[in-house]
Length: 311
Image (cartoon, rainbow, N blue to C red; front, side, top):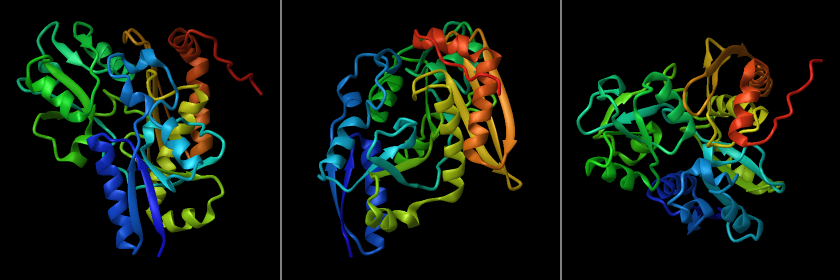
C-alpha cells in the first residue's frame, strides 16, 4: 500500500481533521505521515480576517509544500479554500459533511433573543456580523480570533456575553458544553462550504486521486460545489458577507443564499432549485448581483464588480 504525507495547519481543529483523514486512510492499509505547516492566517491573530483580505491566507504555505512534493495531500476546512484554486492543484475529495450551521455559545444566555440590550458578541466574520445586526441592531459586535479553545476561554472568562461559532468544529472536538442555540439557516445563513473538508492534491496526480476516491461524498460534493459556484460568481472569499446553504431535497438541489451589508441594514435573499450544482450557484449569484448585491459588495471590496451583461 501507498505511503501518504498529509499537510495540515497546526490548530487543534485542523489536526483533528488531518488525524481523522489519516485514520480513514490507515484503515485502507496505507502508511500515513503528518506534517504541520504554519500559514499566514495562523500568524496574523490581532487583526479581523475581513481587514486582512488575503485570499488563500490559510492555504498558501500548504500549497507550496504540495507543489514542492513535501506532502502528497492537504486537508482543509473547505470554507478556507479559495473558490478558484491556484494553478496546479485540484480537490480530490470532499468528505461527508458535518452540520453546516452556526451556533450561539454563551455562559448565561439561552439564545440570541435572550441577550440584553447592547450585549457584547464575539465574531470576526462579516457574514455573521451582518445577520446578527439585522436581527439585533443593538448588539455590540467585537472581533474574535484564535483557535476554538481560545475563543471559548474568552467567553468563559466573561470577555463576551456570547460568541458565534461553526457547529462542525465544536462537534468534531467534542466542545459543545456552551452551545445554547443551533441557529436556524433562515436567521444565520452559513458560509459556503462550512462543515465540509476538502482534500487537495497536485493537479494530475492520478495515483493519489484514485487512492482518495473513497473519501469523496456525492452529496457533500454537490452541495458545496453549488455554494462555491455562487461565492465565485460574487467574487467572494470566506470573509465577505455572503451566505450559502445548498442541500438535496427530494432529489432536487435547493440553494438558499444571502448578500448583506456588514451593518445588517440590508440583506438580499434568493432561493432556487436546480439539477446542476455549478449552474444553480451561478444563476443565484447573478440574480443577487442584479438585485443590488453588486453595490453592497463594491462597498465591501472597495472596488467595482463586473456584473455580467444580459444575454
